[in-house]
Image (cartoon, rainbow, N blue to C red; front, side):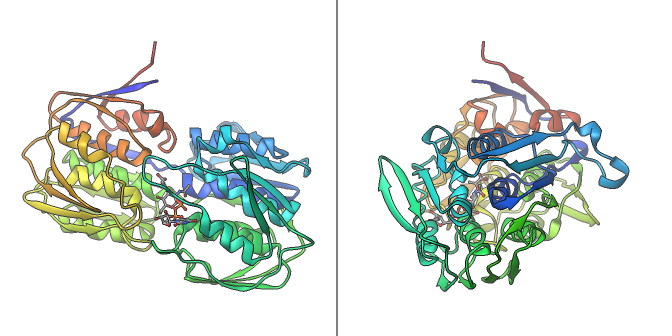
Length: 436
Ligand code: EPU
């Protein structure tokens, strides 16, 4: 397993290109199972989770082909890191998502709705718990049941079947922790091919839901209200392949905004959508970070006198849980006590112990962390536990005195495209150490 060695203390200065959104691309790849003909996706980041999803839909009968970046017409498309991805369904008889893949990536559950709607059957291994909590899929199953699918569990698999065609209905999709992002997408996809109208009340409003709805509409689906808590879907008989560009990754963008802030630096972040980061911008400005936007580019700078804040993670448009660990790393250096509360995944605090090993003073009380700001962080050997927690440790390493070694960085490779290249290019001293 590879590690990162980070020598802290450099101010970051320069330009970073933001990649396409992982969390948008993953369910969109699964939605391609429903289309007839070729779908071309632009801006799909090169990440291990994308490789896993490509493999999964490949096993489900899709031909997936990645073009070379050189084949892209930059005058039309603007700067891109990666070539487009072509997806064509060539075999509709397959419907099993194996445990081997599902266990590495929970987003595999996104094939459930598309398979049931298009092929009438789905066998998907039940995703287990993960480092950020239990993460059940009951709301996905309940929503699809309301559309008429029948489920049983068999040898660790969810087995779903549809007699005839799914039927649209009026349903509430929220759960105890609020709306579900991938659950909304799963049910929305299935409803796109159901008979009649479906109304999803309590739907997630995240930009990734909106992006998937836009893709489905290009494929011929009739969807209204996406991006609001009530989505209306009029089922159609078929969906056809289309061309679509994935939205910029708001979590990667937020992470680099915090990288600028924590290193007292100046970064220009290109190809991002600050509208998707309104709560993050609000909190960072409160902390004292300077943020300016110009179309799709954001300029972030900080003079590193950081004011402590209170922050609670919430469903969109609230502060995203996927940036909680990164903000906490920044607040470790604020001038006083900050309070961070986690409302989406109450156990998502594995980074606390590691930040404390680096000299942070964070105390956990239930789903809240009390962060007492310190003057400096120190380099240490720490362990990446999940994707976003690891990003928080990278940020702390960039400012810590001495060298930080982060082990198990395969977690970071799941969700941050070329992170060490992007950070080195703006002045960070970060090096990947390959396992011998
Ligand atoms: N929930 C249920 N039952 C369900 C589904 C969810 O109780 O059937 C609960 C969850 O346990 C949680 C809450 O509902 O408390 C919200 O979870 P949600 O379903 O919205 O999460 P998700 O769709 O599985 C996506 C992202 C996560 C991100 C969350 C919240 C992808 C691939 N994953 O997960 O991203 O944290 O939304 O915004 O889109 C990450 O990128 O590191 C990551 C974990």
